[in-house]
Image (tube, helix red, strand yellow):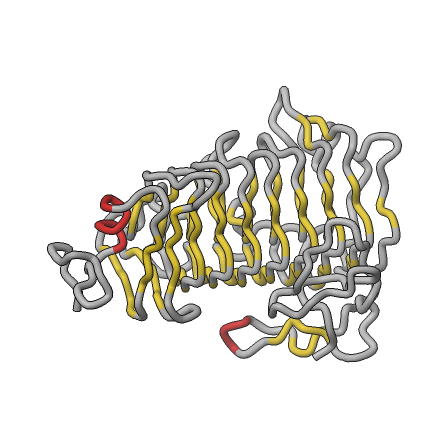
Length: 347
């Protein structure tokens, strides 16, 4: 019921996120009411204006997952929403059935993509056939440019199709990114991939299930090395290939560097782990390989529940360092002995 000729207030709202994005900057809060925001071509918005380090520009759904963003055209490079500004927040949206290769895409630094649902990306009839060279994902970033991002507390599922190894649940390509408390289910590629120019990332307490090509795949382009990163407290189950796949010199012809930590993960998929490319001095520490005992291993859309039952082997088995203070539901974590995965307590 809005109009882009309105004043953009609660009583006279704008109609489109694109108009809001072109109208605000700096310390702005854009509230998006419930509804479906679909565009016939392009993306719902390209957010080019930046906030500041003291005050981000924030786009927030007024009710969780009630503001739905999708695209009707299958342009490969048109995500549902594209953030090129820095110091921008995207909070609480449902990104549903975009026909291009990406759900939410960051081209800036200090971008927070949090508390969103991103699903059915590039897998509908007529969607673009993403592949090698034009990969995709639920959440992704520009190589070398999407630094100091925080992509956490999201639920990502049904990304690409099984057999297409180039569409990933979450795809980080740059440095100093934080990826925590996400649930990723049923991506054609890896549930979570770190590639091209990643380093100094903190990836902790994610639940990665049922993906078609590894739970976590990492490596780097020639001239770069995956280094100084943390991968801890992540629960993996039912993934094809390896749960942790170090795609270095022998696997992909690139380097994996020093300073990485892999600790207190549960890698319970049948493919095990492929860590032969880890350099000397790096190994899996306190790794377990026991079924995490989820309440219901099914797509979130069908009511699946990736919390764990009482007696689960992941409870209190995580590392305290770098564990987020709360879990995906906002439950306070046990700071001394946090659980592995996105959920802190038993269901």
